[in-house]
Image (cartoon, rainbow, N blue to C red):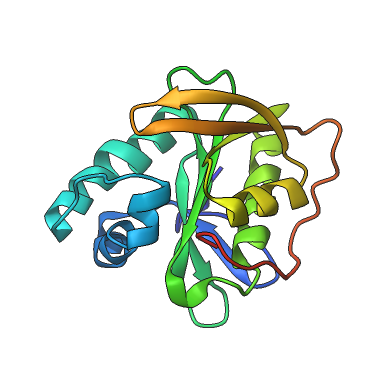
Length: 188
């Protein structure tokens, strides 16, 4: 699915591409952001080398095995990375899990909504009919964004860090427009 440069899809303003170990310095800043740790979890990455290993064992392995992963999200206008967004398969979930996070300076510009819609199109292209998203109970902005693009509350689940909300979207029942603008807060 990705082209020769690892690009999976583009929107009006963004490019979603497969992560590489060259992205490690940016990803280190993203994954050590206090909001990441609070809402996504401490991945115990403290150095660029830790992130390189995390990318190899995470995003690159997921992409090779499942045809999808958390993609690096870049602005088309200048190639600047703004965050990550994509789909991962997780033990205990019956459908792919949509995940996203943006750096603080890129939140509130509609990038998360735009990237999320693009990731849902990727899921549809892969033949998926349902996508889930796991949200901490106190992450209202992410919950609002997910509801705005069509996710609905499915259930409360228990994870190591406490209870989370599992939301779902049936792709057959929802038009997933690509592109667009708007959104604020959360890890968007």
